[in-house]
Amino acid sequence: MSLFHTKDISQKSFLITGGAGFIGSHIVDYLLKNGAGKVRVLDNLSTGLQSNIDLFSKHPNYEFVKGDVRKYIDCLAACDGIDFVSHQAALGSVPRSVNDPIASNEVNVTGVLNMLTAAKDENVKTFVYASSSAVYGDEPNLPKVEERIGNPLSPYAVTKKANELYADVFYKLYGMNILGFRYFNVFGARQDPNGPYAAVMPLFVSGIINNTPVYINGDGEQTRDFTYVDNAVQINIKGMLNENPAAFGQVYNVAVGEKFSVNYLYNAIRELLNIPHEATYRQEREGDIRNSLADISKAKNLLGYDPKYRFEDGLKLTVDYFRKLN
Image 1 (tube, rainbow, N blue to C red):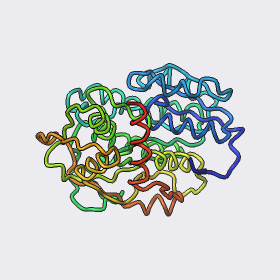
Image 2: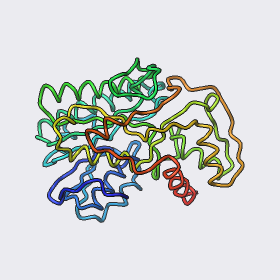
Image 3: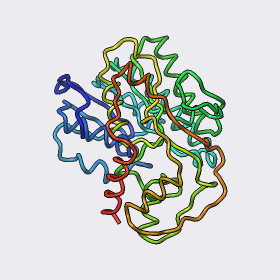
Image 4: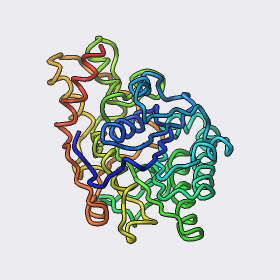
């Protein structure tokens, strides 16, 4: 993993909510390996995996707090004595939000409001949070630029837009140092391949290796700006440690700036595995965006974001990881 910071963080304390999850656990990993004074995880393990945080259990600078972002008292306790917060806890997945919009709202909206308030009350120095490219909704233009969004296409997209609205108000009203990150289809090791809302990458790899059905929604020609997880880690670290005043109170695209179709992704995985497994096509999903491609110049200019992994680089590492699991 590349080094994404230069300043001494040995006396700094970090809280990662959702730290047992996919992206959160990678942020924790980076901080512990690179000298952070304290790294605390807040997670209720509803979607995060115990195995992800077992990796850190023996590290002297690691703390785990089992708690729920839907409970303000848990958020307040987790923020006690913390310098920097990376809020990754969320209920992901557009289909999940379509099936259960109330649960998505409770975790993604109430959870963010609780965490923002707790961070304010505990005088946290900087607060960064996970938004999503889903907020672009029906805005048709490519590439996606932060200042131009459309109407949300799913309850999940509504929750992430609400995150950005609350963050903007807390930045302006309370003077908090806040940055938001619109993730574009982040993938990599530790993505959970199990459950009804598993991400496409581990589903494809697992299905091909195990010769089980693999489904592609629609015609497979929908495009995504697939973003390897280390790129998401980089912007979280640079965001938390940011000292450029102009960078606060903003949201940023987190991507590579390249788009590939789902069909291309599937065929690339088959080639890497050298298994000629055929996919089954089915109807497209409700609430999905057709094409996605990010303009990342804002993150480059204001935060020094420089994605180290292109799609193919990250894909090889990811396929190797899941091949070993299977």
